[in-house]
Image 1 (cartoon, helix red, strand yellow):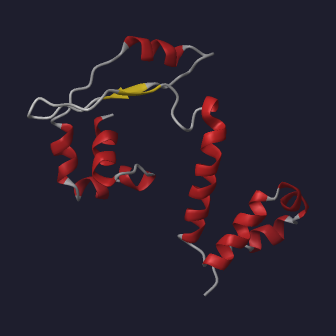
Image 2 (cartoon, rainbow, N blue to C red; image 1 turned 90 degrees about the vertical axis):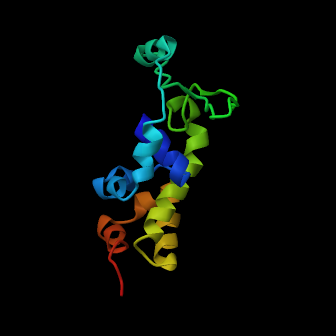
Length: 139
């Protein structure tokens, strides 16, 4: 948890590549921040996580500064990826998919793949070989 918080504070985001050893080794500020953190368990959150009906994955965060001031305590009962927030998460997931495509393919090719994937009827009618051809990297 400390690692995730430190990286999110430094980068403003948390993505898979931030878990690679090379990223951690290049960022001594991560360990510096981690060493300043105190985590405590809220037993209710742990209980709710184990409840199959709720499975809330809740967390809270509050930051205390050297001068004695602090942020408000921010609580998130259900993170954006949770089934209870699926509708909120879908647009973010779609944007993440498009960004991933654009990291590999041209804008034109990325948009073509993305548009097809969003069109449920059209993608069902697309032969697999044509779909796979869309993922060929063109010079």
